Image (tube, rainbow, N blue to C red; front, side, top):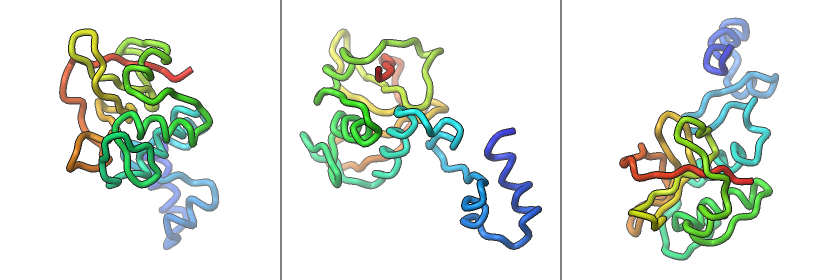
Length: 157
């Protein structure tokens, strides 16, 4: 049974109880782009939740948080808060991950955008073809559909 299926049955049993009450007694609330509570125990899914919590934070080149980020700054910050160490740049992060296929990707894996052999951008895979990332100057941290097939995937060790 998925978290989405449990919420309606809990609401029926709980009557007028609030979603916060349900969460407090062990229910779960589904949040788009964030892993379920069963998966939340891994550093990768914790990092995903941390990145999602930064929604709306402004992009700033070279920034590593906690209020402004560039792409690799967001991944570095999120994984550091989840207990994993990553190097600073997207290319360095790619070199430190275990490379995996698109079929093997899971929520919390890193998605590396490349041109030829050069990695130029990174985000955290949120599932359903979407990533949390800090796109570019003038933009903010957000959930976005992967827009190209020129991506590689990496799992933080």
